Amino acid sequence: MSRARKALQGFEPYDPAFTPCRVNLSANENTHDVPMPFFNALREAMASTPLNRYPDPMADDLRRQIAERHGVEVENVLVGNGGDEILFNLFFTFGGPGHALVTCPPDFSEYANFAKMCEMPVVSAWRDPETFAIDVDALVAAVNDVQAAMVVLTSPNNPTGDLVDPAIVRRLLDETDALVLLDEAYVEFAGVPELLGEDKSLVGWVAENPRLMVLRTLSKAFGLAGLRVGYLVADPAVVDMVGAIRQLYSEDVIAQSVAVQAVGHRELMVPVVADIVDQRERLAERLAERLAALPGARVWPSSANFVLLRVPGAATVRARLRDEHSILVRDFSAAPGLADCLRITVGTAEENDLLVDALTSLVKETA
Ligand SMILES: *Cc1c(COP(=O)(O)O)cnc(C)c1O
Image (cartoon, rainbow, N blue to C red; front, side, top):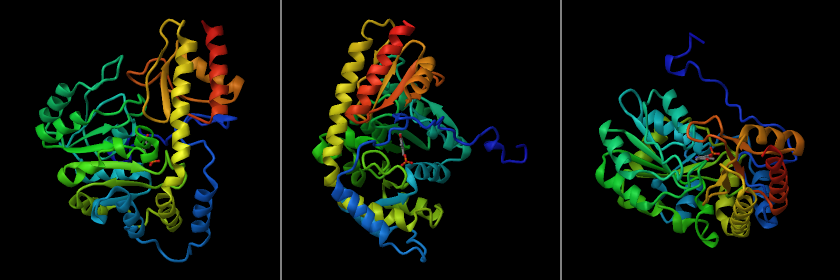
């Protein structure tokens, strides 16, 4: 351990605390069956892709398909092995000692982890402890105070579920000099399902705002978490810089050809996203109803494919859901600012019913 680079000491392999369960609502994956024509297009791409040649390093076919999706230029698109790889490469590129990242926790814990690995100081502009609202004045001040290299906002935020007010992004662009990274991993669930969230996305701002970078992924709405495809829409100078330092072949040939089909056939996923959005509203309503009498319980509104709730004894509730009902959810009770909080991925109607009934019976016993 002591031989490792100093900034890396203390890091441990990621453990998602995954136990095989009948119902897994712990990782914000898409648990729905995908429509048959979508599945067939992907399977055909998989089967017809030769494996003997190296991949196209910049994945230009996929970049073209993505550029077409968003009405941007190919030069604005960078593909990566999941959004995670792009996050790391952005912090590696623009971070380092004296080049701080400002985050708004509670948010995606990988931001702080990856930044620390890249020796990028992390400054926290904490959200309101009850509503999770961002204090925009404090945020702008924090960015300017340290002359931050970058500020990251998550819209909708993981794990709190709220969408970022575009006015906050506007103020960061107008009143600071930082790069502004907007993580839209869940944006497909935030808007009109027919538009797959484009009505809530700020991708359209990139052309006029060269310091804005928007991160997207196929891991959530597209149901392709295992494929590892994410992308960044940003100024061509950012794309070239990060493109120059990234691992040449991190996006393999199968991922590239399958992702071209997935993005090309995206309208086939509209009914799936629409159902997840319906289910989310139903799940949040029913949880709020069943927990209404419980002191200290709370369910936050969500624009994503998960719901955050607070229940007394959350860690115990989570363990009993797993052990007695074979249902897996994510426990955030040890995370700063998220005492007694559980995050539940929106599943199919059937999965959500099982979850609501199991949770209700456990909470009654515990109360
Ligand atoms: C899931 C997620 C990502 C990206 O996930 P990948 O599977 O690496 O594409 C990025 N940001 C947030 C907030 C996420 O929850």
